[in-house]
Length: 241
Image (cartoon, rainbow, N blue to C red; front, side, top):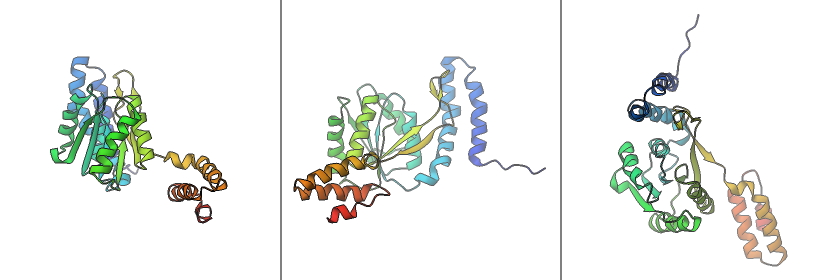
């Protein structure tokens, strides 16, 4: 009988499964330490193996929202390996910044940390403008990970990122209700589809209305953006017209 070959990721998954069984049976006081010493390093390793093909060298700049759950940020940074990082945090989550920096090995020269006073898109956009646009020069190969932070903060990050045409990513996972953490080994890094591709028809109608009113400059601008950003749609004719 032919013996099945287990992939490196599969071997780690088996090891994680064995350790999770232990993790779920030990007292709460010890469970936290056990997770970070025995399980989380394996989660990082498996996450990198599972996502390296799609994300290796894809991004050089990373913008993240920092909340109470810092683990997803560690996974994203380890996998993307950005040259520059911008953290957006609140006064309640600043304590997790040191944990992320320590676990990822980021150098002080590699990251900037900015406090968000209010969970509003305007506040977030203001900081992104100061750092991403004015200081960094609006570089290509940039991604926003909005997994961490409050729901309002994540929504603001996603809105600002879509407006600035920055790729949006997040860490998806299954949840372990018993341990109140993501189920170790189920974490995946995903790219969010550009909302502009979904709502392109709405923008097209807006541009046609502007064209019919004689505002050709504004219509041309919208069709140019549609041509550049919306896949499987040919807006070149509209733009040229």
